[in-house]
Structures are given as structure tokens and as C-alpha cells.
Image 1 (cartoon, rainbow, N blue to C red):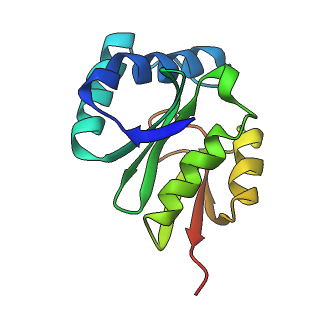
Image 2: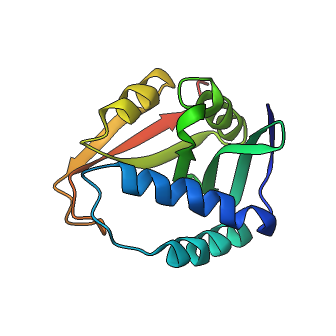
Length: 145
């Protein structure tokens, strides 16, 4: 597996991974079309620090950081539980002294992952501040001094 910076050539693949996750996750309301996902990720790739995990030329997942916020973090189903997410997150942790992100309260698998990586719950909301209107958790990670 290699980690590399995302380029505009990765827009379709990252949008596919994002869209597939949304469609496969029963609690996520259908808010965006696949074309809107592509347009969104085109902007993210141009303006944020986006890493791609790739194996044998196939994109396995991606993570996007805007300052200290991890705003996007998605893996292809076949990449889950294979160390891909850990590698992507470790690289982002190497690039910053502090990170934060939001996780839906219903996403217990992601919560376990973030907590294993050393993220701590900062606070929880009823979802009024997110587009999906789903209860969420703000996680924070700080490098050890």
C-alpha cells in the first residue's frame, strides 16, 4: 500500500467511495447526487490536504484535512479492517499536533476506531448543526508532549 497526495484524477474514485458509503449506510439520508459528490470532492482535493491509500493501482480510501479538521475519511468496503484507515490517520497525525473530527453517534465502528487512535470525545450534539440532522460527536486528538 502506498499513501500519496490526491490529484484531480482521483475525483471520480473518491466520489464513488463516498457515495457508496452513503448509500450503504441506512441512517444517512439521501442528500446529494453522485455528480454533487464529484463536484464537492473536486473542491476538497484542490483546497485541502487529501491523502489517498492505494494498493496495486487501486484506490482503497482517502482522508482530507482542512487545518486541524478531518472533514472526510472514507474507505472502500474491501479496505476496512486491513490497516488502511490506520495508515491514513497515522500520516495525518504525523502532520499535525492536534486534529478534530465529527462522527455520527450511530457510527459505533468509527467511534471504536477513533478511540483506538487516541481521539477523545470533546462533546456531543443532537445533530442540529449538521446537514443530516443526526446526533454526532466531536472527537479531538492531541499529540503527546
